[in-house]
Image 1 (tube, helix red, strand yellow):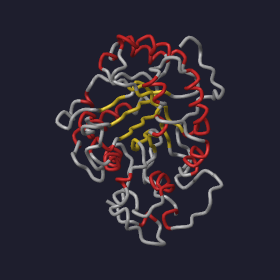
Image 2 (cartoon, helix red, strand yellow; image 1 turned 90 degrees about the vertical axis):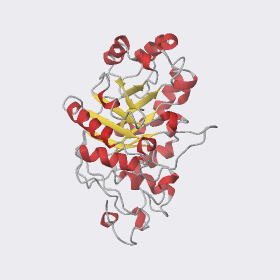
Image 3 (cartoon, helix red, strand yellow; image 1 turned 135 degrees about the vertical axis):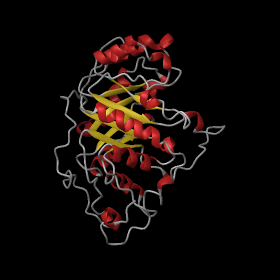
Image 4 (cartoon, one colour; image 1 turned 90 degrees about the horizontal axis):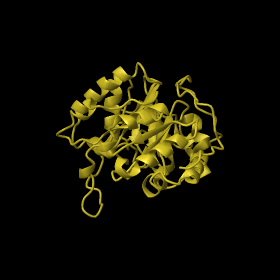
Length: 333
């Protein structure tokens, strides 16, 4: 990038520490609930404002009947989800900027303590490869500006083909030109980026080096003990699973994600120990869990949350909510 990105919406950094009561909810002007599914959402029993845990996206059809009630309307899934977890990574922003009405809906469906993270557009990371993308980034930030106070971080997910040999200068110029007032995390998927000069680049500019666990199930004990750079005042951890085993030939997904298919209990325990130690010297920790990590992201979120002091109660039978009763009266796991 040859020039500093002009940020039309530069804001002061907003501390993402929840000071609201668990029962409060932002005023949005939304319509009053008109069904049993639209009653007061469930809330974690112990909310640690420094640790934010959720899944990578929330709109999986596989979850209908396994996590969401079978008859829950699509436009109420986020409210249901946010009544259990306190964060989510938005995947759709990787493909297109969200329209204003969509952003307004996301905010209306979530309580004040809830935090979003979102993926930067693939046009920036995969198509332009961090080059000549000033306007694309500016347009993207403008589209999510209403979420600023509820946004934990923006993830710059780089492809495996993005390497130091070809792209070191592009990375440097991109980082130098990032606008103030936003939190950014970069996920490197090529091992050659693990060099002191790139760690220092991110550290000098307060950009988080995202930690991503893509180990196989057999090697699950390795990732939490790797050399993982700390470059910002927050951590961004992605529990992704073995990406090489996710798709069949032709790009079709191999698995249905309705239950735990392979346990990573050892890795979850080790990650929790590491993150507990990190919590003393970072402001926020974001842990985002993929379905592919164990086969069912809600269970992964619940299990690592319980080890980090957050109680996320999953419904035992998501499609069996008694009519007219508060969802918190459901039988819990």
